[in-house]
Structure formats: structure tokens, C-alpha cells
Amino acid sequence: MFEVLPELTADPILGLMTDFKNDTDTRKVDLGAGVYKNENGHTPIMNAVTKAQQIWLAREDSKVYSAPAGSPSFNDAIIELALGSQHSAIAEQRVANVQTPGGCGALRVAANMLKRCSQNSKVWVSTPTWANHIPLLASAGLELVEYSYYDSQQHILDFDAMISDLSQLNTGDIVLLHACCHNPSGADLNPEQWRALAELLNTKGAIPYIDMAYLGLGDGINEDAYGLRYLAEHCPELIVAISCSKNFGLYRERVGSIMVAAANSKDAQTCKSQLLNVAREIYSMPPSYGAALVDIILNDAALKHNWSDELIHMRKRISSLREQLCERLTFAGAGDRFDYIVNEKGMFSFLGLTVEQVKRLKQEHHIYMVDSSRINIAGLSTNNMDYTVESIMSVL
Ligand code: LMR
Image 1: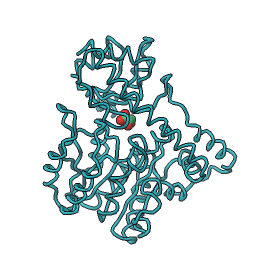
Image 2 (image 1 turned 120 degrees about the vertical axis):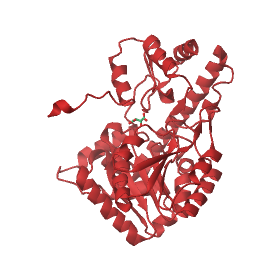
Image 3 (image 1 turned 135 degrees about the horizontal axis):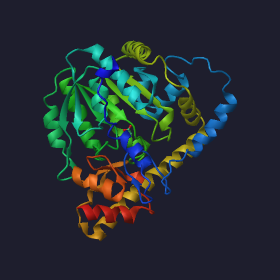
Image 4 (image 1 turned 180 degrees about the vertical axis):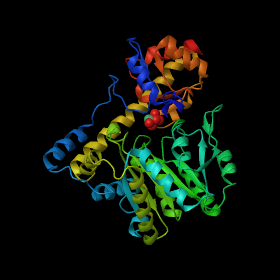
């Protein structure tokens, strides 16, 4: 029976990790998957996580099932991290969430719930968006429509085009937004644009669905959460898929949360029951280990402080790499072509190269990036910067 199945090529982002691993050239540079790396190209375990692991090891006394919704104290802590402790939606008790296997688990659980809400609603996604958004949402049976977002000629967020496309929203449509550090462009909405967007969504009766995978890696936790917090206050209904992969460095532990801010506490409870029901259909309940670590960190003032300092260090390193890359490219003769990279946020920016140029970088220079020429800025370092710049210039 299995012979009817075609063999598929590897995922365009995850496949790069394998290709990079198998490359034996010592000059190789990994600018592929969105993973934080230090100066030595290593993704370290954060110190706060190491300490939390020791605490958890001493504390955990059973491997019995946890709970379908995951850890209640993790769930509360993650709501507070996302919305801030004083948010009106929390006071109004209209927020519900469940722990999920990573941000992908969160996105998918909500997608299945949305499909149950309406057969006709469309999900609007930015052009471009994270490549995996499309199969994740479409395979839940949702119809996707694209809205303009990034102008790849001028390297800016084209807000007018975005608003113009979204003016075609119908009541009950869903708009997928990136809370911060837009993946793949690095171009984020500013506060004024978030406010204008909230007004449009409310006028149209559309629902924001926010993917928040990079909180703290743009401008800081409060700054990065501005749009989410504003929308949660001003829109009657909202969904947030949260990932702890990047900002806690817990990639392989699969820690995430799906959160709904509903019109009232009764609807929030109903949504929670639906999310749990969907989760049971797919994977029953989330893994506990990584979420236990996040729970320990967020509920211990000293550890939370350590973690936040480490996150600040990661963010500052990424923005310094942005500046260095841009400076070196200019110095190497690229003029102001790459200046936009300094103003973009988070791990990603486009280099604006053709697929052919990306292929040459991989084959001739052992530099790995997604075909769209999206690079993971955090994969750069003082060790590989000159080589990377030289190689980019040679394919231009
Ligand atoms: C990325 O966009 O590179 C990351 O989110 C990793 C992934 O799963 O695609």
C-alpha cells in the first residue's frame, strides 16, 4: 500500500540543518533555521534554564500523566508574560489558555478550533509569512488568503497596501499577524500601525490571530508585546500562539501555549474546552519537561531576572550583528543597498538575492540560507562575518 506514496523532499527550512551538518567544509556558515547562536556558532543552554533543570530534577517525583491543559502555573505565568500582569482582559477573566507542544502545536490546535467555529471564514496571511504557516493552517481545512505586507524592492513594510487588502475582510475572517520580529522579513508594525489595524479589524468584525515566537528578541518584552496587548484590550476576540523555543532556548523541548481572549469569561471557558478537545484528538496532552522549566523561571524572581538579562544579551548581540553586517557590506562596495537590515528586528532579514545566487552561496561558499535569501542574523559571528560578506559580494 505504501508504494502509492511519493517520496517528498525535506522541509525547506529544516532540511538546511541536515545539509549543513553533512557539509565537511570548515568555512561553512549556517544562516538557515531561526536558532540563536553564540560567537562560536553554538546554541547554548541558557543559565536560567540550567538552574531550573537542577531544581526540577530535585522536585519531580513521578512521571504520571500531567493534565490535558498542561501545568496551571505555567499557563498563568505565560499569560502574564504575554499580556503583562495588569491587563484588563485578565481582570475581566476572559483569557483562557492551554500548554502546547511548541508554537506549531499552538497554531494547529487553534486552527482546528477555528475550523469548528465557521466553515466559511478565511485566514489572511501576510506576503510573505513563515513558510510553515501555510501547511499548518491549510491542513486544518482553513482557506488561506494573502495580504500585502513586505515590499521586497524597497525593503519596507507596505502598510498602505496591507490596509488596502485587509479592507476586503468579511465578518468572521481571521488575520494572522506576527507579534514582533516578523518571520521572514524582520519588518514590524509600529504602535500607530497596530492601533490603526485594531480599528480596521473591529470595523470589519475580523479576528486577530497572533503568532508570537520571538518575544523579547526585537526591542524588549514590553515593546515587542505592544501590538498583542493593544489588540487584546481593544478587540473583543483574539487568539495568540506562543512559542518558548527561541526566547528560552528550549527548541527541542517543544514548549508553547495557545491563548484565547474571548468576549467574556463564559466564552473563554468554552474555548478552553474546545482547545482541550482538539488537543486530545491530535496528541492528547503536551510534554511536561520544558514547560516545567519555564514555569520555574517565571515564578522565581531571581531566575526570571537572570533569564531576562540573558535575553537582553541575545537581543543586543543580534542588533550588533545587524550593524556589523551592514557596515561591512557597505565597506565591501555594496553602497547603501543593505542599510535596511539595521532597522529590521529579530533573527531574520532578506538579502534580496535570487534563488540562483542563494544556490551559489551554498554550493561554492558553503553558506546556507533559505531559498528566499532569508538569513538568520544570529548565525553570523566575528569569526564568519568577513567570509560571509566577501561571499555575498562575489555572487552579487
Ligand atoms: C525558522 O523559521 O527558521 C524557525 O521558526 C524554525 C522552523 O521551525 O522553521
